[in-house]
Image (cartoon, rainbow, N blue to C red; front, side, top):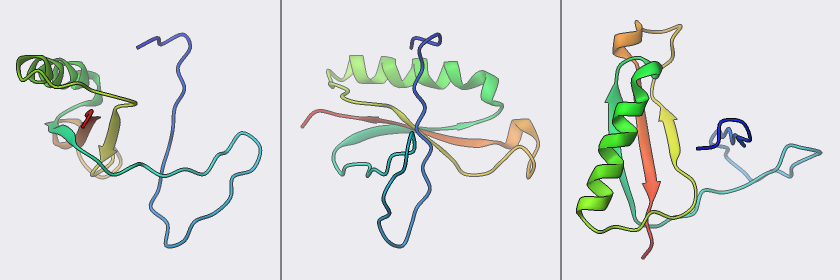
Length: 94
């Protein structure tokens, strides 16, 4: 990841599609094959989960495509850092 030139997408589920405006763009996460892992712990330790997922993909000769996604199942204002749940998803080529 190029942390100096990083684009970030933030999404929330909506009941109906909306249009974007200015720098805010509407979009959809496409359906398809993925590989994922659930990380339990502080956000500062997510690198280990990314590394494990990358090693799994390589060991199983899978081809990631597009962007990786993170889903936050709880928040720092709800639980202690060691209880944070973050799902990491790599979309895969068909």
